[in-house]
Length: 48
Image (tube, rainbow, N blue to C red; front, side, top):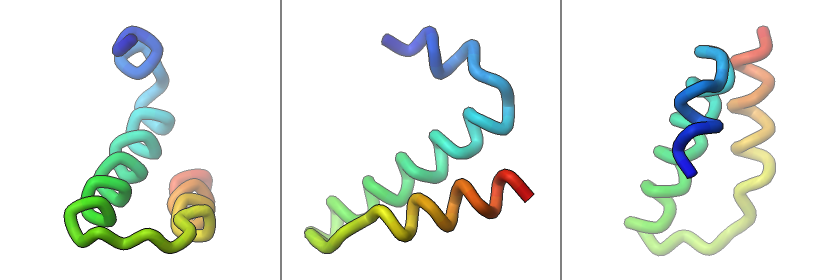
């Protein structure tokens, strides 16, 4: 299960790590709102 993540390019791993941290913080705070915009912002930042 980890293989696609560990073999991904550094840019992709960075996106995965940031999204994972975002989701973890939202779960810790019990935030149930939509996350799509925040994920899109992360991807846009990393692509630049």
